[in-house]
Length: 383
Image (cartoon, rainbow, N blue to C red; front, side, top):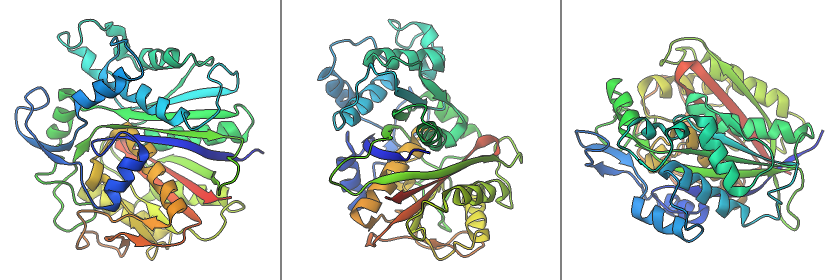
């Protein structure tokens, strides 16, 4: 079985248009969340992390003079382009594949007044994926992963498995979502949005904060030379079948996903897990469920890092962006602070990291959970 190496990445968010800009801001505990007053998104002001549309268009104009792309498609194309710059991948090769992870894609095209020059068919995820795939002239038909908020992690697990089994040499995983009135009103209907920037796991949290962004991570069966490589060790997906929006109160689904991911990875993990990149939405049910699952695994002493206080919940992009940050932490030895966290708001003991610290890290666990009771866990380790 082949190894799957992480060879390149990119993050685009309100904090910057590449991985370095984003991680520099996070290390300084700078948040991209602000109060948004935009009638096109919501009749009432709300806190969110939003990308500057003018800057997005300006950056896109540097790589293409074709404006026949939606905001969502531009984010994906910019992110993939930047990640590919650091590789020697042949876009036309038979052994290269694109995986697109998203929850809503071009959902704004359902509004007939939005982007009149764009064909309505691109509201279908498969059509949007084809548009992005064709821009790069990738030979293989793209795979779309749309499984609520675990989509990004599922995309990485899918890529890792495909490479391990020799199906492809290179797999590009791009996760992206943008904020629209459809998305914002959906979370408002659940009364899920926080009245302040979100505070994962904190006793004073009041809900989640939405964000938009794109992340691209490239896996390959060929490692980069002259550097310490990070590999995909294993991953698992589960469903607790508890409720359409509420997670299991016992953390059963996430517990099983973590347990199976660790079992898959036991022969590849270089040492004990150094930290856990949590989903950390700052909603009472999600935070509590995650804490219970982690505690059941007897991981209560392992530092937890949550990034949604910086970027908001970027939906289909979250798992990719947060995995990139986790892998970079392994390379730099810097554990990020969970901004917004001060005092525990869960009923079982867990160690939420609240300050930026330096720590030698050989392996880490990334987890995610989403509507419909879906859960995912993936493990990365130094080779």
